[in-house]
Image (tube, rainbow, N blue to C red; front, side, top):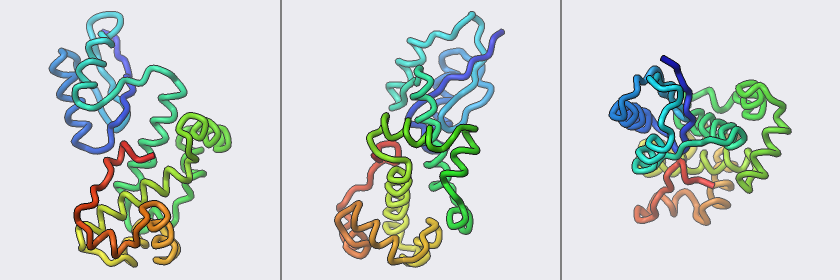
Length: 192
């Protein structure tokens, strides 16, 4: 029986992994492995039924990625989301995103950056900032950490740097955002 790796857009959390696994199993595939951005399945036929997989995943808010450049862009986004969402306190401060992305995808960073910008309309750096600000919003809503602690966890050199970027992205100071619980957060897969 052949194995196939399918690439899936909009997978951003462990719950997404669980849903994709369950949906593929319901379709009768043996699911060998699922992680953010892709799944490896075993099937009886020469090729899986991509139309059916696409239909089922779309109902759950996911999309099949069939173009190789789109797969690469989605993989970069998934890697960035994973790094920011599943950070360890000291990791983001020390992490050089451009070197990490280049090493992870075994490609020149300038190529990846150019491709990302052409496809997404923003730079990788700006995408990272947007993801960090969404994470900061989440941490501010919880109210368990100070802005200084949030800045440290997200790898900012200072609380002022985070505050400046927060205001540029949201139009609000962190304090204004925290006070106004009505302001909705974006889904991290919809950040652009």
